[in-house]
Image (cartoon, rainbow, N blue to C red; front, side, top):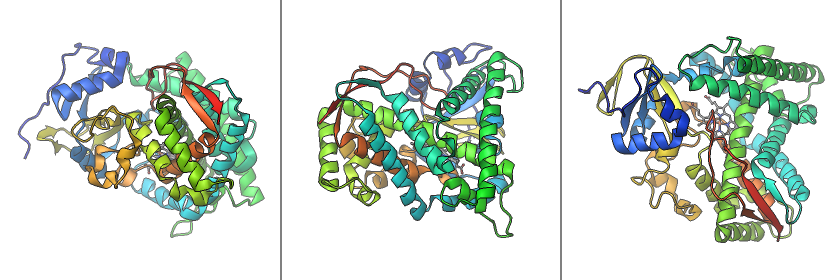
Length: 440
Ligand code: HEM
């Protein structure tokens, strides 16, 4: 039974709360607060109280409990995501999750894997010996190509730059609203909000035209077609608006996060040539002189550990938020109904209580089923509980196959000596992440 009401809190401004610290360096701030104030601490985003909860057992409790719904930040993105899987709640969410889940079954994943391999190999052929590349740009384009092809078939080819700019405009408006004192709605006509509105209109036009052509051409083999034919128990499918929301959500959630996982993992490999050599040796011994195929995936163990380890140090979704429906007890504190809670992968994945030598990039730590030996939410790049990422297997497969396809014949060296971040919804880099390429 909880006895205490207020957890410890670092000193803050009477009006801004901790916004200055959050804007200055949100990752360092969360880390410092957790290390200095313990597993439950109280922050203020302007006047809004936010509880920072960073103990794996408490995080598991929150992510699996029915008392918590997604937090307000996701609802701030209604215009873009609509009522898609990431933001919907309750029975509607459950119905949609059940309709969409089969699109991620083993057979479908194996087909998507061919697309992952095909596009990665195209990039391995585009790269030039000796050149230096902005690897985030490359990985964003590659994962966007993969997401577009698996979701929509060939229909968005050539639309990449339009889609990329639209997404940047939407994210800019979101991040400036998230860390502002006066939380204006997305309908308020600031220049950023207006740009975001036009961007969503452009994306909508594209999506609805794809949905309409899919309804008439009867094509079966992309993810959108699977969603289009999905029916629940009473034989009803999705309306065009639901399809639009789900397709937009899957497209958005499905490529930027994976691009970041690959960017940071490649950067780490570019700093650790010995680990990169070990990964390449594994790929060459598993694949031999054959073309890379989906059948190789299950044997690329070290490559997969490398992706896990990259996401441990640089989790693309660096924090996860929830809101309590009713008053509850967490970590000995009584939290009122409506409380916003934030759990931060960046902090927990680097906590020395769960990780030996936490700042060391060490993919081999994942040997001997490390994941089974850890507290469940000591590692949660994909979230947890019933709302766990629906694309987690897709993403692990993509990360592993892309690394295998690229590094089989290429050595990467990190030119960027240190990473810095501009965390928005995801852990975006603040400066270009550059790698020099050498054919091997
Ligand atoms: C490395 C890549 C990825 C990371 C780190 C990641 C991370 C996450 C996280 C942390 C959540 C849970 C959010 C929460 O509970 O508040 C989530 C949910 C979700 N992700 Fe991912 N994701 C990745 C790739 C993907 C891919 C490839 C797809 C789709 C193709 C996808 C689609 C979704 C969807 C639809 C949800 C909402 C699920 C629900 O609430 O039922 N994600 N993701």
